[in-house]
Length: 272
Image (cartoon, rainbow, N blue to C red; front, top):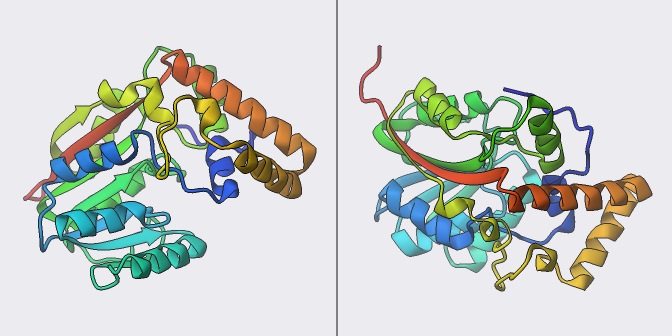
């Protein structure tokens, strides 16, 4: 699996974080609901949300399915924001957050009933290790659910490397993710990708409103604020790079080069 070198920073993922505006993963809450459905969430289950960000999905799962959720994220700022959000939602008794690395989860083996990672397996350098850790901490027979970017068309290695560098996460072939889940110790793997690979799923990601076109993902004031922040962090070259990345990335989505897939499997109940 390729390791990104950061030659096209600030990436799409960087720009989203710099903006300070919460956007959801491709597919939005529709995909989060489907994730909960195939994970079999029900009252009383212990769920780990890996790379939980601002806590939106973790809180949603607790509110709507009665589960107890632990969220983990490498960013202390995200943990602070998520903890505050859980308190404001009145869910502090069901949802908690702690800082940690998805490649070295600070939990014992066989701890959780369900482990979920929404759109963040491909961001760290070692995606296989992220999956290995998810499987390690879920109970035998427990569900492991991820959704991630995939390559939808046959591309050269150079094309894949460039798009991954601009995106800030590394898509894989549909079967590559399945193979990595199998390597981690997951069986009975299912995948859904046609619905979630529709181009509009990549920009219908706002909590507060529907987005008709990728150019409308940020309002004009939001865009100006984001570009100002990028300017402060990376100068005028960073601004032009962010705009270039955005144009190339969304064109790749519209051309059907990049898609999105939901995967679910269960941890083997035996060890070799």
